[in-house]
View (cartoon, rainbow, N blue to C red):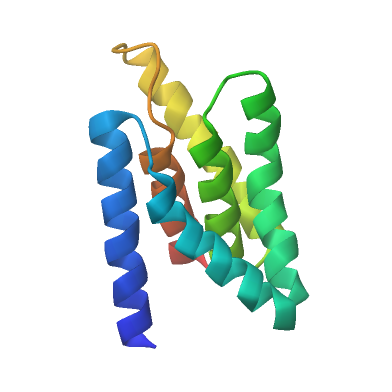
Length: 128
């Protein structure tokens, strides 16, 4: 269990850094997580429901070009990792607060969502 958590933490750090540096998350980093959530959801349907709760708000934002497709996939994976729809929605809400704070501080108009979304997921896990 500890080894799995360590692998996930390293993966999240790589995803966050990739998005922070390039404003892109390569699909090769995301598809293994998507696959893991789908496979896990086959035996635990609540995982898929939580994954959808994490992805649908980003899918709606994607249709308005407010985020990229990678953010939708990342929301799906992180929602699945949280494994509870309310936790996934809280993650999305916290991530948006983080994005708004970033916009208020200035800087580039287009900011990567990945690092904030990952931080929000970690915070939701921490508060339990």
